[in-house]
Length: 201
Image (tube, rainbow, N blue to C red; front, top):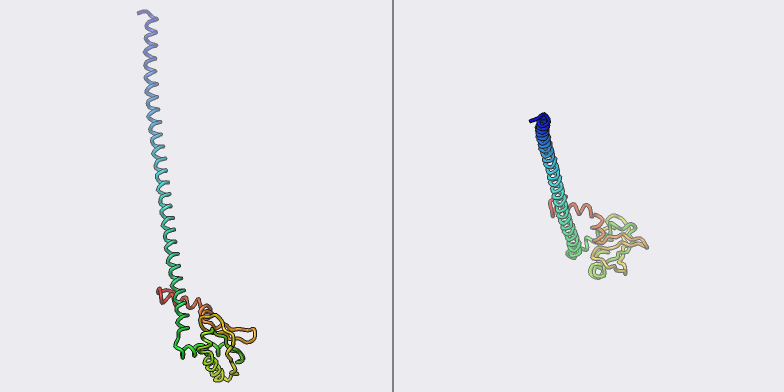
């Protein structure tokens, strides 16, 4: 083997050795990149999973909140219906008092609302016919007991009301109807009714 062949052989050996080193380095670089990519993918997957879980939890909480609000609204509407029904029954109960009690009730309303003792009492057509004169007489007696002029009279007018009366002098009227009495004490009565119906005020 001459000198040129040895040089070529040595260059080839060095080239092979260098190639092996390059391949080994490339392999290490590939492994490092692969490891880094796996870590990155794992981190991104974990972040995506945590984000997904958080979104699911938020959606569940919102849906539960909406369902709770819907239930609360349904319960509130039911309670309001029950209170309204209780008021309607109370009004009907007052209008359906025994005659003696009803006359006393209306007379007390009229005597309390009268300012001059000269007012006229306006009732429903039914009440005017059935108890009108008795209410006027009883109301005047109450005014007389208090030394107030007692000249209340029964109006020829009637109103479409469920019960109670209007105390009228000229254009001035005091509304003593059952619905007005209930409306005027609505908040207080609502608390009382709620307490009786639901144990709350």
